Length: 441
Ligand code: ATP
Image 1 (cartoon, rainbow, N blue to C red):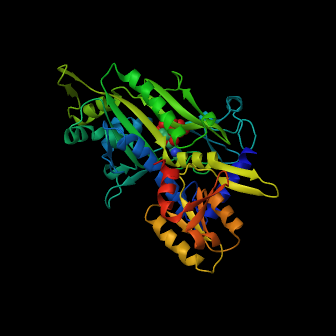
Image 2: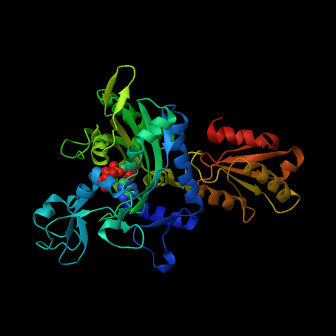
Image 3: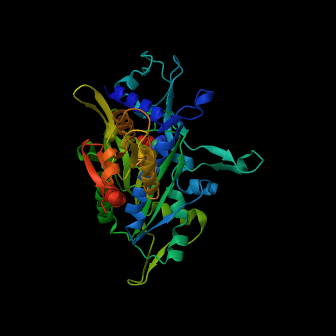
């Protein structure tokens, strides 16, 4: 059942142009995906909502867009060169690779391979570094090695002084960034849940030591509230706190926001108290003073960092899964994506009921008005019922139809995706009406 839903979503994503396998005409490349016309809009809207909640609405948070390639010393300081590893295990029998920490402990005890079932065939675990390496410039030697960043956070840490000085921020303040990250995952999979190239939405909040625990608690609640605000079902969300044995080397406390995927409860975002680990290490490795001087108390300290680290692609997947419904109607089934209107790739579709009597011309004019505000889609082919279904499957919240009454009184019908109710709305009031229904203002 669970897998079935995932398969249906994967196939809908391809059919409707949300997400394609990368390089498909060459047979695809494992766990790499491309966002199609609908997917790119959905992803942009997710990012826009995150940026709004982080940067636009908070005077104490500013944005950043750091380079993917950074000085290799950054990754020594951060601990990634030495420790960003997963335990890799090979099966001697079927040649498959696994993460040892993902193998059922009972099977691991017998060294039983999870795929082929044979005992005593798994190799010992070796630590495998997840960073992608490449070379800067034409010479491929050790001195030219650079890494594709495995997280966006370090770009923020190394810029913390630049940002603070240029934007005249005082602690506490935050820096937000959305960008690509790369991890050579041993077991990518479950569609865009775990890929080797993905986008993160991270915010690093710099605080005075001693205030860190309270700020961490605040941020975990704010991040949970954000998922509800973008329309995710609250009963499918939960917190999971990391036990002391699970904490990363830099963390004093870690809380995951988890979602109940068809494959079970899994991490969607991590909220971490990273202490002064990062800035202390960068101070040590760069030799630059990264301490903060508090004018009011005349104290000098290395700020603590509270991090909120979300996966953008994983949020997109969550939105797709959470919105998906196969709804049984009287004599058929409709597939609907119940996206929050703010996230919907296409906000409205415009239909002339029939292709005559001046209806297409009027519908085109309405389409032009809507396009000045948001993405609208024009469709004049097939029965209107089928056109509604196509939009339901794309998650379009509103369908505007020009019919014969429109020619009499300059009103159109607005059909709501979720309730399937239709209201008549005057053409001149249509844009403000849709704006209100989409953004609530
Ligand atoms: P895991 O232990 O599952 O590999 P993690 O705990 O190391 O993941 P973080 O480093 O905390 O993950 O990354 C923050 C967020 O980035 C995750 O919550 C997730 O949403 C996203 N993320 C991490 N790795 C991937 C990936 N390979 N593909 C897609 N999203 C990812």
